[in-house]
Amino acid sequence: MVFPKQLSMDEAKLAIPIWLAALEDFTEDDVRQAAKLVLKQLNRFPTPADVRAAVQTIQLVRAIPAR
Image (cartoon, rainbow, N blue to C red; front, top):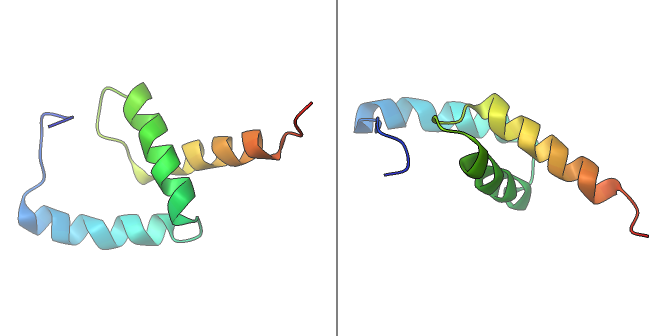
């Protein structure tokens, strides 16, 4: 798929709760937008910190008043 190494089912079962906990303070919409952004920018599988940084960037841009 997008990145060469895919998680096994056991690895995914361990990773999903960690990702959910790491991103729980953001809205689903913010996380979706951030995921699209990091997939366009990174050439490796993103970390929760990558997604968090992208959400924060999106929120900062959204807070800038339109002229």
